[in-house]
Image (cartoon, rainbow, N blue to C red; front, side, top):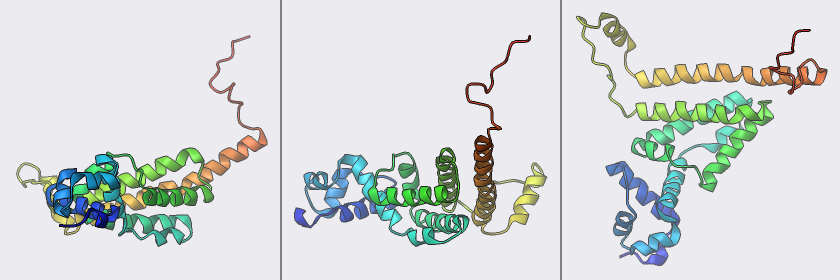
Amino acid sequence: MVWGSLVDRGRIGRTALELVDETGDFTVPEIARRLGVQTASVYHHADGRAGVIELLRERVVDDLDSSTLDERPWDVALEAWARSYRAAFAAHPRAISMLMTAPVRAPRVIEQYERVAGLLLDAGFAPRTVMPVITGLDNIVLGSALDMSAPEVMWVAEEDGSPRLARALAATGPSRADHAFELTLAGFLAHCRSLPADNRSAQAALDDGTSAAPSERGVRRPAR
């Protein structure tokens, strides 16, 4: 029996992650049984199921190398962070759908996203583009991490019925998920590199007064 005083948020998060890795889900009573405490002891440290999910999220992110965000320029940092991010979540594929559909609240995780937002803003990204970039990177990384747990062959194609698909599959070779990740990440970063320049051009146009006033954009003037 583990005394309630020895139960802490870290142990609760690790136990929840173990259960998700094993079964795909957890319940608070299951966590309590595995820790050898009363369910109330778990609730004393976590605000219900949502709170436990955030503790679980922090355990996954423990393996994410945040020092990659110290690299420069910004695209080198973002690429290195994405690779570490993917590796951390690929180790726990059953947790991905749970974490993707729950709002991120864990302070340690929010701190990393704060650093990514600052990295992009300091590089000249317009504030309106920062969250689409972060969300897009999340989609690439988490989708690829989930793909790493899928069978190597996801399309069963026969030469007779699908000759072109079968040919492409035969030419793909091993590590399909890795190749797809490299292709997608490279294309994503290439597009993102154009965004600060676009923002600078738009700002220069505003500074020069060459842009139409907001009230005039899209307004059809009457014929004289």
